[in-house]
Length: 345
Image 1 (cartoon, one colour):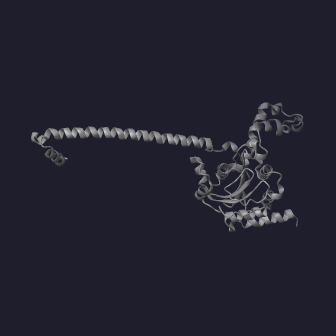
Image 2: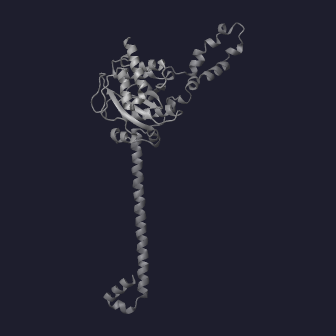
Image 3: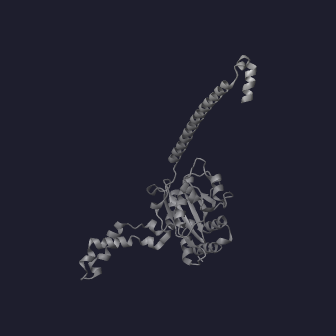
């Protein structure tokens, strides 16, 4: 048995027993089977999202309503381990991350079959904005696992904040192809010169085909359809209409949905992302919030002032009415006048 065969066997064994343990433990076992230099973290195991936000999210980071909607689809979230720029296990506090590290996490996703990929896509973006370093996430949903990462400015400047998803792998399905694909994530299979190269190679090795080989109308029109309209391939008596531009456009339109038809509801690309609440926007939001409070305070103060004026007018009118009812003798004795006023009041 070769090293790769033994590694594939370890991956197969872990996946077949994936549900026997909690997600944190199962994920650690999987990355160990993939020969990652894992230093198990003693904190951040299977947290609910509220505890995670309280414990690990910088208090300066705000989330929009849409972002919270996605975050609350997280059933549990775990901080697994991190690798530093020397590709060794990082034993420091995982809260203090730098751009020379990659953080590995696991998320148990509470989502429908229709929305699972869309939810994983947007949650990946939201989680990535929390940490300074790139994050590689293992998602679990209904006996399926998916891997994701975000190519941000610190990892891939030409594709800023693009999410890369793997396929969903059903670990209940004893298919050797699944074990082979996941085994491609093996630590030794990736470039280890720099953290930038390692992380991007990691994403590349597991990403869906349409991320790696995107199909465009130009490709269909001028590339893959060339042979389709070659007179030799169509025959000598091929119709001239087959070579028309209109026909090419029809083929191009038909095949441009190739990946969407294959993935169905699981198809999601980077044009479908939600807008994140970024730092500058957060500051503006806080400024607007403060201004609203200030305006509300001014309005309340003005209302209070108006109310006091109204009360003073009412009090004066009431006193005048009392004075008209008083006997003239009371004004000669101030003490009797005061006693009478108190009695009337």
